[in-house]
Image (tube, rainbow, N blue to C red):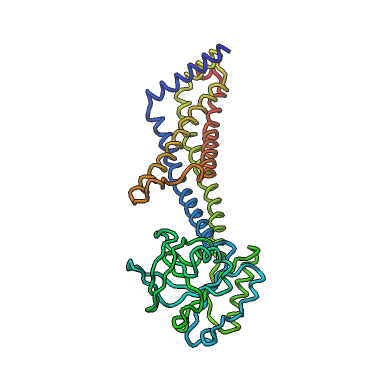
Length: 376
């Protein structure tokens, strides 16, 4: 045991001595590994950010949500009769329906800002009952003003007092920014000019969204009406496509990095073993096993390559942090984290270590040579 410890200690000193005497050899291996890992992580990080962006958009819009927008002109039967066409009523059997009328008018505030105006029919009272009970029938949605603050608004030369609320829940999926919500029929003159009926269906089952979207489009075609249907199906398809590409690129880049490393480091290892064959033969003649010499070569390459990989990762994260700060993203944005890229990091490091293992295999041919032949 003491002999083994002494041998390992000597071989470790030999490694660091050679690094000091021949730094070019070490820098070559380090640079090759660094140059392979850094662009691979950067490209895979781009896929991660794109996938997270799509997932954020999916969560915001609702993966189980269908939006139907129909523009109603002043000459439409809906405006003339004052009733909402019940053609889409059967959709209520497949989920929760929330409907608003976006009016073609803006509201003015005492601060000089403008806000969009929407009307809610009686069918949506249950969804808004909590807000209406706390703040009254006229609601002013804002992200900046204090909640509950009364604000005087001017709509079509009429003045109303509304209470400030926050955009959340169902209303947040319809609008962004300042919005005034009034009961339907409160602004008859404005409604008679026409409006956009926006209906949101939150389906009971996600797998029914595609069929419901086709049904709405077919109904509109049969009625000869123009509707705009929006859902997250395309985003979901884009996300699935992106994730499949991400997996292929992950395996491809990791495998390519490991293969190139195996080729370059293997060539360097053979050249180094040929140069040091006399020293290695002397060590073996003193009783050092071939497996110990091989293990130290494997350890040396693994140490250099993994050090280069870690340096490449920190270079990427520090560069991203600097870019976020330079573009004014704030201190909370620090780029990709190890949690976000855990799969990519593991795959890259597994493959480069496999490459290290393969790169040392050609050296076994040198170790199998007879000691007497080398020393003679």
